[in-house]
Image (cartoon, rainbow, N blue to C red; front, top):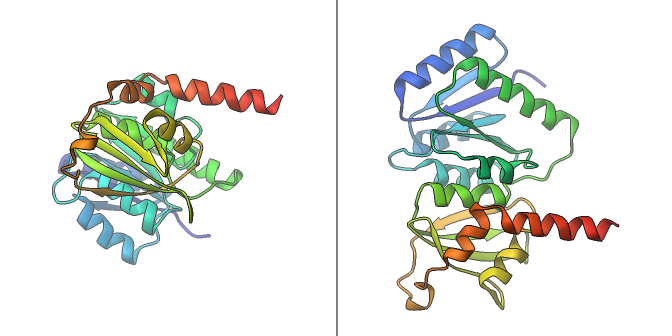
Length: 234
C-alpha cells in the first residue's frame, strides 16, 4: 500500500516545523505541510494524502472551508482538527465518526503520532462511509462563531441548509421541514459533503434559534437520536 502521507495545515510556522521534524524522526510517514487551505488544496491535487491535520483560524481559506472542500473532492481522507477551544461536549459528539478526530493545543508530535496510528488502524479494520458527520461539523461552526450558509449533501436526494450568524443557528431547512424537525432529520443521514456560502440577507431566517444551537452543543438531540436508534434495535 506504500507509506501514508500526512498533510499538516496551520499558520503557526513553529508548530508546523516541530511536528514535521518530530514525526520524520519516527520514519513512519511522509509529512507534508501548508500554511492555509489554498496551499493545502494545491498539495492535495498532486499528493495522495491519508490524513489531513488542520488548524481552524487561517487566512485565505480557513480550516472549516478546507474540511468542506475535502469532503467534496477527497472524501476518503481522514481529518484531525487542531484547536485550543475544544470542549468535552464536542468530544462526545465526534465519537463514532471514524473519519474525524481532534487534538487540543498544546500537544507534541508523540501525541499526534498516537492519534494518527489510531485512525489508520481504524480505517484498515472497519468499513466506513466517506465524508464527515454533521455531529462533527456543526459544533465547529459554533466554536468558530462563523456566519454562513452551510449546504449539506448526503446523497442524490438528501440536501439541506443551516443558517449561522456568529455561530448561532438562525434556521435549518430540509425540504418541507424547518427548525428542530429539519435538524433531527438531517442528523440521521450519516457522513456528508459540505459547502460554505454567504448568509443570505433574508429576514425570514434572521430569527435566532438559541434552542437549536443548544441542542447541538449540549448533546441533547444526539442522546434523543441514540435512544430512538436503540429502541428500534430492540
